[in-house]
Length: 301
Image (cartoon, rainbow, N blue to C red; front, side, top):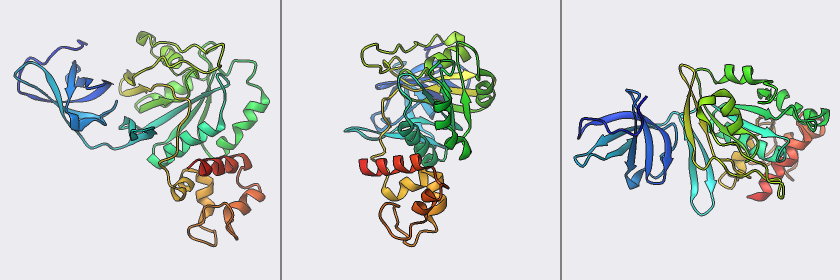
């Protein structure tokens, strides 16, 4: 497949989709399979990997993206001082990668799951580096509540190969984005699945224990015959500041399930009387840890 070549015919429009975005430029794959570098019109600031677009080759030989076509799904997150920004578009599923290194955080996992639920994009939890000795029974027990809620969970290791066949099966014929903290091994997973990609591997800092940001721009890769994988930059937190108190409960599927039985319609399940959610926590029908993290996110708003 040729890359970064201009279409031969000028003043022609072409359909394609975004492979990667670099400031005011983007790599676009055309329906022919050819990849070209395009400039962006200023009104298309929110263009991201996976977007279907129309680009045009102008008289000066430059290609320009002139339109973003309607999205069937989009994952968004807030960026400080910039507002809500798209991460990836036209997704079938979100692969949330977590690991014991640099640090396993159920709070960040919950935030990604809330974002997935509110975007109506099915999530898959991938616990990477499962071969490490620190991945003990206590760690596995902390993941039980997610499996009981019906979230798919894959234990994976690029060193042992564990779980890689499961991941491959889940990625086939789907458009997926890999998200997670820096250092959890997203790029290593993609290297294993697509060795030809040679994505940079994140190295854990000995001083901070935090992952370094090796993926600086999202990139879309073809997987199998019809699959697509988008590798996104690692982030250390996923803010929920854009989610209202009322909407947050929708992202916690078990809280939403019981909220319809609360006495007050606008109950946010904190101090209100006759709250069905708090009663469900007391009766252990809702995991207490998940509920406490829900309260913590509420307090962050």
